[in-house]
Image (cartoon, rainbow, N blue to C red; front, top):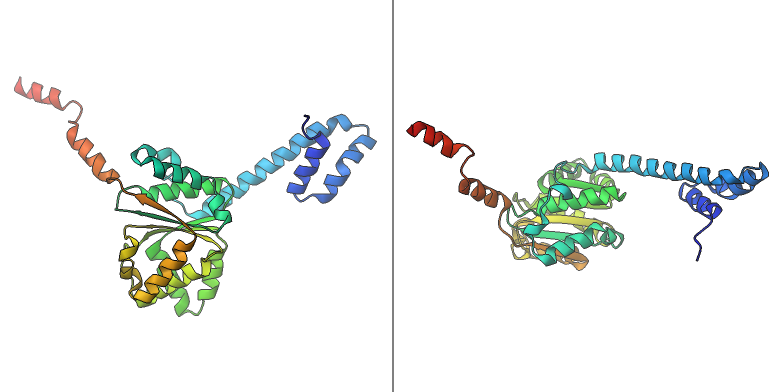
Length: 264
């Protein structure tokens, strides 16, 4: 079987670039001018334009995402994680969960790598052309609370709605009062079944009453965020603790030599 012709590929590229007239007229115009052999070169130019547009879009998305620069897949050690969790992260990196407005909930104690893993996921989504926002939970809650006081909460929520994925980092790390819990619940309700919410937290669901304060509000929040979700359990030791133990177990380089010289 032969692949699509150059003319067919040009039409596909022009449709992608939203150039409907060029898609229809390119082949007949080149042929009428006696330059049909140049269609291959024209296809290469279109491919370069598509690549450049994608790169410019990725740069815009990266600036808007506010992702931690150093927390990417290249700086994350997946071998510390159980096989199931590694597979879940690999599946999420393909980005299909965004199409279904699926939430991602990452639970684990401090230092287990959940924030790093979700930031790395955010970087992967941006490279794929997805709009992402990474924000500490306490900061976003305060911004929404300020917007509510200024009667601008709907506008603030519309701004967040522009992001296909909002990564809410360290939910529950700082205790919220009733007003803060209300705007957080409003955010979850607004994005429910429409946009993806990625949450990292050191509090399991049974402890979320510390966030929402009221049993009914807690149950309603959990119900909405869990309905369409992937749950990631970072049940591993703290990366920082492991690194500290390694440093303590390994004597400094040259330490033995210095001791020998002092004895002499």
